[in-house]
Image (cartoon, rainbow, N blue to C red):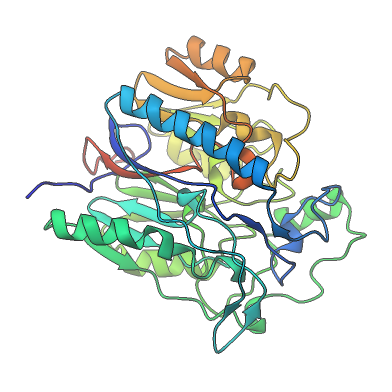
Length: 366
Ligand code: NVA
C-alpha cells in the first residue's frame, strides 16, 4: 500500500494535487456573511443563480489545461465529483437557496502531514461543499493506511454566528479598514469557523488569518487540535475584505515570502520571521486594474501562484510584473492562463489542494 497523503507546506516538491472543477457553479443568494465580502461596486450585488454555461466551459478549459501542465511536470492530478449546487441547502438550523461550487478546493481542504481535514466554513452556501471531495477522500483512505480523513467540528451557522447589521451599503472603504484594524469582523465567537485558505502551513507552524471567514475561536480550536504545532493568528490591516491568506502572504521557498504591499504584516507579527532570517518581500503590482466579470476576488490574485518546488512556480500568464519578480527572485516561471477561472473562486493556488509534497515537518522558527 502506498503513501498518498503528505504535505507540510506550500513549496516542497509537489507530487499529487486536487484540482477543482467549475461545473454547476452558482452565484449564491445573499446570506448573513456574504454581503460583507462582495465589494461594494461589484456587479454581483443582488444577483444570484447558476453561472452562465459559456463561462463554466471557459473556466473548465483553463482548469483542464492546468491539469495537463501539472501532469507534464510529474504531478498526479485528482479531480472532485461535481454536485448539483442549484438547490436549497437545509439543516435544522438554517435554510439557504443554493450551494456554491467545487472550484476552489483550497478553501475546503486543509492538508497537514498525513491528514486532510474538511474545514468549518462560515458561508451557509458552502455547508455541503466537502461532499465533492468525499470520493477522493474515500479512495485515499483505501489506498494509504496512514491517511487521516478528518472533518472539523461542523458549525451550526445559526443567526447567532453572525453580527447582524454589521454590513450597511453606505459603509466606506475607510470604515472597512478601521474595522479590519480593530479586528471587528462579521462573524461572532459562538463556535469555531474557518476556511482552509486562511491557513498558511510552514511545517511546525500554522499562520492563520483572522478575518471575515475565520474567527478567534478557530485559532483556539487549532491550538487544542494540534498541540504539537504552533498556531499564530495574523492580521493584515490594509485589507478591507480580509478573506484567505493566499493573495496576501505567500511563501515561495524556505526563507522567502511575498507580501501584498497594500496588506503588510504588522511589525509585531513580522518579528518571528525576521528573527529566523526569513525575507518578506513586497509582491509585484498586478498587471490588471480590475478582476474579470462576476469575480469575488481582487486583482491581487496576481500573487496567488502555485509553487511546484523551491525553484519552480506556476503564475497566471498575463501577470507580467509578478512573473518578472519571480524570475528575479530566482524562480523558474511556468505561465498558465487562468483569468477565466478566477470568478469561480480564485487563482492557481485557490484552485488546488495539496495531497502530496515531499519533505516533512520542518521547524523553520526554532
Ligand atoms: N481576499 C483575497 C482572496 C484571495 C484568494 C483577494 O481577493 O484578494
